[in-house]
Amino acid sequence: MKKVIVTGGLGFIGSNLIQLLLKKKYFVLNIDKVSYSSNFYNIKSFKNNKNYKFIKLDINNKKLFTIFKKIKPCGIFNLAAETHVDRSIDEPKHFIKSNILGTYNLLECFRKFNKLNSKAKLIHISTDEVYGDVLSGRSDENYQYKPSSPYAASKASSDHLVYSYVRTFKIPAIITNCSNNFGPRQHPEKLIPKLIYNIINNRKLPIYGKGLNSREWIYVKDHCEALIKVYQKGKAGNFYNIGSNKNLSNLEVTKKLLNIAKKKIIIGKNVKINFVKDRPGHDVRYALNSNKIKKELNWKPKINFNEGIKLTFDWYNNNKMYYNSLKKKDIHKRLGNK
Image 1 (cartoon, helix red, strand yellow):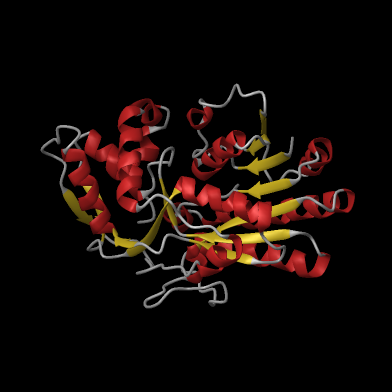
Image 2 (image 1 turned 180 degrees about the vertical axis):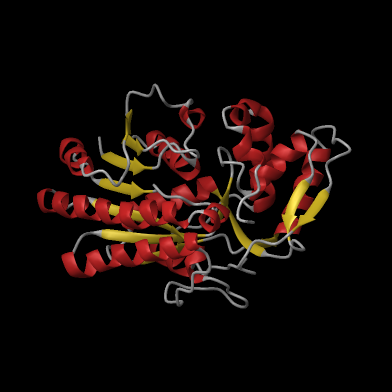
């Protein structure tokens, strides 16, 4: 049985990836430092699986190398990161420590481990936000990095670090850049789970600016399938964009959610769109060209937005305990507006 490590596996994408890896008969070690966005509710469906193990550890810890030597993974998926743009505006230092210094330590540990096991692969998961505003067309893997927020800059830095280790130290690492994910288990500091929480709890629906900012949306399971495909067939040193080619504005997403909710629950009188002061430096549009992964690795998304958003609403509506497992201040507080 192949063994893999997922860092940040108590989070949104990480927990969904682990669930899929277990179904595909991998042994999975989850390494997570347990921060505010880590949630043990995310792993309740597989925490007792005999092929799953959890270790609490920050990727800044040099003990990573000892763990690599002991487990002898054939693959490492690096999802450990601070990810919320608003929080990066308030306190950039946490993003520097986790996303840049954490990646550096992981790379050093992997570099030493790679000398013992040259067949292991590192998959570094990043974001479309490193490209900054893409006002027309779509950004392919050769598009210039123009990060706008401290979060995006920290991820761009980590991408460059990984690639530099590929070129300089010949480590077998691959970098992926994905569009906006949505689906079960996403922390409600992000748009879609926050809107669902507010709809269910009869609260206003906060939308930045005029709601015209455009994002490319991909269902989280499709992203996870792509990551496994990259691990299995991707070439070391390559970048792969992962997207759906489907853009929607924040306002369009909100209206679609409201239409779904009206068919499933009674909507309270306070559930109304509430345009709020825009985020500083808010990018207008992200849009990826994902032709490379489609052509080279034969991957394409299977779940369209309309289907995925229904599945997402149903999951949160049927898992209200998920919200109860979080601190209310993390759900209600609007960040990035000091």
